[in-house]
Amino acid sequence: MTTQMSYPQNVEEWRDKKRYLWLIGLIPPTALFVMLPLVWALNDWGWHAAAQVPFWIGPILLYLLLPILDLKFGPDGQNPPDEVMERLENDKYYRYCVYAYVPFQYASVIVGAYLFTASDLSWLGFDGGLPWQAKIGLALSVGVLGGVGINAAHELGHKKDALERWLSKITLAQTCYGHFYIEHNRGHHVRVATPEDPASARFGETFWEFLPRSVFGAVKSAWQLEAKRLQRAGKPVWHWSNDVLNAWAMSVVLYGALIAVFGWGLIPYIVISAVFGFTLLETVNYLEHYGLLRQKTESGRYQRCTPEHSWNSDHIVTNLFLYHLQRHSDHHANPTRRYQTLRSMDGAPNLPSGYASMIALTYFPPLWRKVMDHRVLAHYDGDITRVNIHPRVRQKVMAKYGVAA
Image (tube, rainbow, N blue to C red; front, top):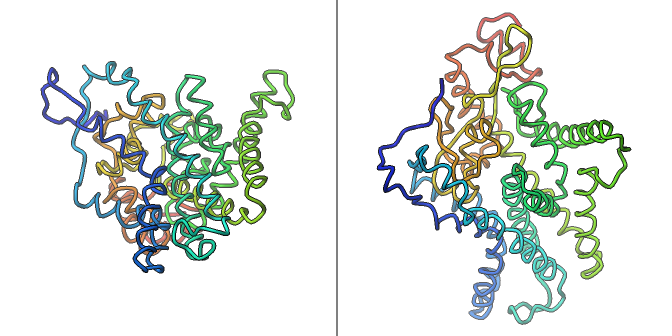
């Protein structure tokens, strides 16, 4: 039986060492505001080319700073003991840390829209509007905060409180990914680590193959799940209570209002930021369950999801940015458990580094497979028949290990 990892600690004196560090999660939605004084200063010093670099803060943070910080600070090393779980779960401070993400997120989206379309940014030191290099960096940075925002929405969407569920859909509106609210909770969590799940990557499947399968599969699954729910309730699928439709409507209202204010020139900003944002979610989906497979029982049903069916990483810095998403096994075992109480689990397979480091690796299939394929096999003691193999490579992989396809 899989259990939580144990760390020596005095329960009576236990304190969450990360309590105030969780505010680090607000860096992505506030980074743009922090960068603007730096942009002004660089322009004031005459370093006009360098003044465009801060607009790339999102990709810089994601692909450079977070991996370096994960490497420097290493694993977390703290699990809450059973005796403090109820108190920790009910401490509202932690949920307020997540709630705060939403207003900062939308403030950044609006300011970003202004900066992208403004023709006179002399107050920032530019001669006219932003150069196109800065605009691309700006759109990608807003995409990063949208992608991390999906993670905040993920935390909120698993809860039973009506406010948190609505905040989840509001947060997803930026990336036009409102259907995630349905598909993740009622689709992915049911089918995780099976060939039927579009959000579980298969052994030998490249990220570029997985991306369209997961994106379109999620839309299809969410629509079917809502259609069945409404049918049981005696309602038509085209009904205001369809959570896919009302979530998508939020995106239409959001971007319709922004285009009305800032003009059609905003469309590239919308497309780049939204697509990059939900693509970041899909990279995380790809690495969370790559090659892992729940076996079937004698009855023909899949075994219950256990910690061994999710890839984990307990690197503290990315943990703080992603609200313990890296403790993914505990999340699948206890979907409604709040992020501050998630624990590292014995028996869960572990990634060689934090999610931030692994995301860039997914873009390069040969490197990804060199790093991950042997880890999948090691997890199953070399038994390739227990692996979730991509159909395209099944015959080749099975032949390689001397097993009939």
